[in-house]
Length: 603
Image (cartoon, rainbow, N blue to C red):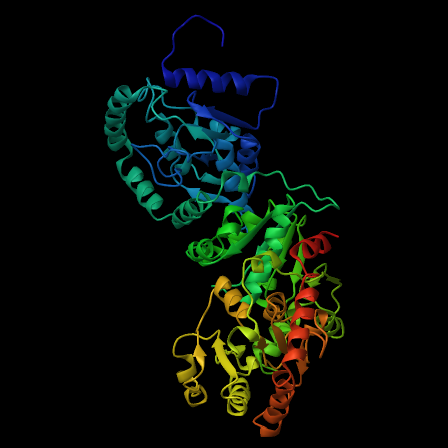
């Protein structure tokens, strides 16, 4: 501005406003911005859009900040400013606010009665109706913006806090702490004298603005994530693979075969240099995953989040990936909302079983599982076996990609495999899971008892895979003979060790879409007995390296128990044939490596 005169703060502000209003350019809004601020990308456009976001237009708006009383995030701050987390910049906070606003419906402007004076955008028409800042009452500054806002509200204008805009404020730099405190006390006395009742009403209104409380909670959550999560630049869509986010169901068991299969795929992709993570809820589960899968943890594969904020967590994380992968029917519906918010994402459903069969037909769960395959229009299915592919394609429309199944064969390289000659015994290991009806625990135990009765001195029965007391809870204790070796729940290394010390592995589930433990048994030179219904024939051949038996007709039929028992007897009573099948099984299993699985996934 022209002239050499030294102005007081308030008069200087008014002169600047008048110069702008009298200029040839038709300014629509006037911004008052402290010198101790750091603005962010598109901040001015965000404020301007907010002023005109409704009719009648707002008279004044301001942004969120780290130090601006009611506008402060993530904590309300007057004396002590919020400090940015390590790795976070003002722009990251701005991007996080923008993301939060995108997840909400409607306007991101929050009605208010007071605004902090560090950054204010004022509709130009306001000055022509109520005048300028009060130079007489506040010549030096501090308090003039509050008095102006009270007059603005009195004239019928609305004020708004723009929840999607962030400006960083290095508090106390405009005046300094000591001067600011002195001016504050003087200003409060003047305001109380001239606007006491109106100011008290305004403060009571501000204390009831629940939208600000909610926004602070959302920002606290957002700031718990890596800053890069909220960068506005969207991952460029390419035909080549870049990154995968696998979404696991709630409370996933890190020892479950399906989870292990997902981790194996993720490890293989990570070793190829492809970015990949597993989203796990609740986030406390991650610690268990780190313990059970230390190598996967070393690759930073596990990311935990709070179930309460699942939609926000997953939407924020998924922005940085190209592919988002559902792993269970419930996670497909989660994925649908995320894909809608981030159109660049390519949805994939990693199908490990035909999940409608988990439930009674016509039940709500059956219907939801059945609908999941066609829930997202451009969703692609990824699976391991031709049996499962046929099942899905015959009932649903989604396109299917089939991968070559694989396991970590190297994990068996240090095992010493059992031989019948070692102790003159045939060791049979069997998975027994009473809590899961399709695993046919009752049928399995009856067959094992038949085998024990026929060969009490030759066969040693091992059972595993069940939780403590579950056999008792489901009334099957009488079928667990005292001679049975009971192992309960085993981790991966313990399962490998048991299979390596066994000659036959028995899985008498009604069906197995893949049967991972059957392939692991083959890698351990152990002959698997698997259900004929399912995808086990993807990796084994009946009577050459495995037995495929009919298990789906049991329903309490003793004849089916006898029939399956007789089939297993055929290899028990012929040790040479059993040894030959063990050799063939191990050689066959060598074809199904994680390397081939990973490459087929990429291809």
